[in-house]
Length: 146
Length: 116
Image (cartoon, rainbow over all chains, first blue to last red; front, side):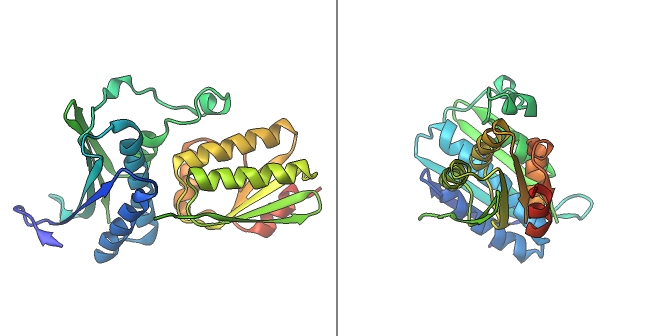
C-alpha cells in the first residue's frame, strides 16, 4: 500500500468486466479493512456496497476499455476519524442521476421493478457516497468510517 | 473465476429447509429458486432459507429470492429466513423483504415458526 501526495495510503486494482470479478474486488476491500482493524460487520457492508457498484458498472456503463478501475484509500478526516474510501471508476457512457427512478418495496413486490436497488443499497450501507458521471465515465466514491 | 453457491435441501414434513453456502448472485439465486420450486411441487407448504454460510447476497440474487417469495405467497405458504449476517439482514430490510418474510436468528426458530 503506497502513500499518495496527501499522505493517504492507497492501493489500485483494475478488474475486467467479467462474471464474478466483483468478488475479486471484495477480497481487496476486506484486506484493506482488516489492515486498519475495521470491524468485520463494517467490512461486510463495504464489500456488499462494492459488489453493487461493480455490478452497476458491468451492466450499465458499456466501458470503452472493458475494465473497472478501483482505488482503495485509507485516511483520516479533519476530525481524525479513520476511514476506508473506495473509488469505482468506469470509462463508460455515464448516466444522468436525475433520471434514475428511486426503487420502492411496493413496486418491487407488485412485479413491476425487481431490479434497480444497487445505488439505494450503496447509499444505505456506506457513510458517504459521491457520484460523478459524464460522457467520459462514472466514478462512485464511497466512504466508510472505521 | 467462479463463485459457486451450493444449496442443499432438507425436508421436515411440510417444511423444506434450504441451506446456502457461498455468494448468492444470479446463478446462486437461480439454484435456490430451482430447488425451492422442486420442493413446492413435491408438496412443501413452507420454506426456510438458511443463509448461515453466505456472506454476500447481491441485488440480483435478492430479486430472485423475491420471486420465490411471491410464488410461495401465491400458494398461501410461508417463506422465512434465518442465519443472516447483520449486513444481509440490513439489506433485506432496505429492500423491504423483511415486510413479507420473517427473519429468525436460528434455523430451529425459523422451522418452529412455519411448522403447522
